[in-house]
Length: 115
Length: 113
Image (cartoon, rainbow over all chains, first blue to last red; front, top):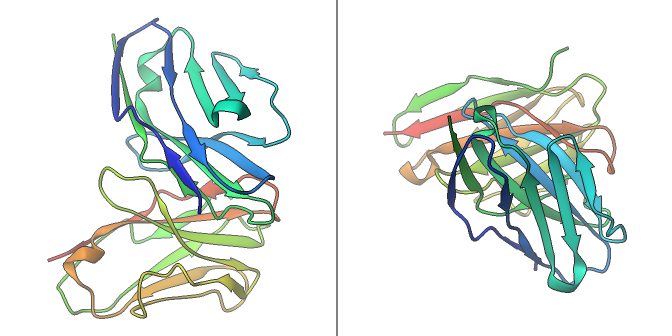
């Protein structure tokens, strides 16, 4: 069975602060994929990143960065210099090899960035 | 084509009625997924199609739920004899193949009264 835990249900920061969203996962599969999605108030899930279990390199995309640590089964997401537009619910998700986009989602972290 | 389209965006129905939702995927995408999201929770996978074939349906919540994708293009999700516990957001997503990201629609919010 697969499980994704996002222990932080809600985080509030002031604009320009850095913030890290935690994600811990459980799986017995040796090949798996991890994802982050953003859900703004409009409701549409927006894809942010997909990472396979064999690639532990950290990734940076603009103000976003991801830290994948297999040893601790974590895939954390950091937003640098947060902006009000970053306010949304962020979901971490997991799927196993050959499962395509049959994703197991965590419960989400609501991020509020105040001006 | 601007993305995955779902219709209606909102549906209010009385308990016991049947409802049907429609999803139009991105036109070149061959895989289509349905998820359910209840308030304050992450989406929960229900079923998916590759073209017109429904390849996984064991996660449909009960036999009151069914989905079709007759011509491998749009899909419908039907809930028969709705119950209050069916109130949720129903999300559709599509992708090209197995190893590309899924794009989600804005969902259909169902309220059963």
